[in-house]
Length: 256
Image (cartoon, rainbow, N blue to C red; front, side, top):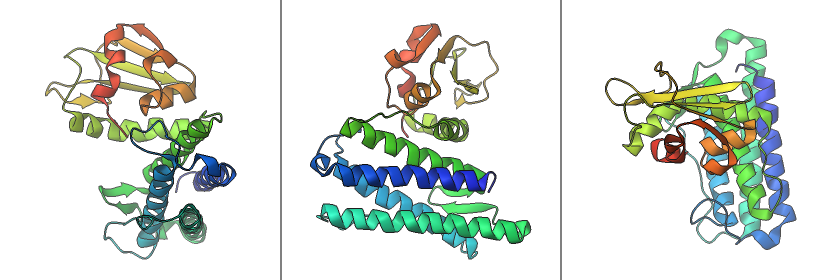
């Protein structure tokens, strides 16, 4: 895994902070989050599923199993303590799997799997590292916002968000079925990271648009990444040029 130690440490840091917040704020278990229809308990259950899925993907890749990874959610009606225990186990399993991947890379780089079998297809190991980092960081931010803490994303999470959406942005756009009018190119900048989206000749949104930029969105790396992820509104960023595409940005790029 490219920059594997840093990726592993960042993922562990984010999930450890997530667990600490859940433990420190028992009164917020039923509190709403900024994710529509989700309470903190739902976010915690989703984190169990996501971390167990990611651990399973790494484990399968290490043993040469190409079957798509699976995640495990807590049983319906599981108590807060049961969910916390499940999350501790799945986070520990994920970190252990990443450690095993690093150990293999150190012993014989040629033996490192090229991809992980995710449910939506095989994903290169470096891209998977970005996805795992983004997921851990943004859900940690979701929880921080729900309990009234600082929800700023760490720099590695911001970089991972840009790297992930550079690949999956067009896929998410296809699912939306709505693209900017032809000729509209939106450039999004956060720190040293930049994405440029626009419609191609077939009307599909691409992250490699070459037409002149009509709308530029800038701001702090965290605010811009949270805007890309639908956690900040357009009022949290600075828009240069035509403001209409910026206001409709999440119609063009829903999720993740």
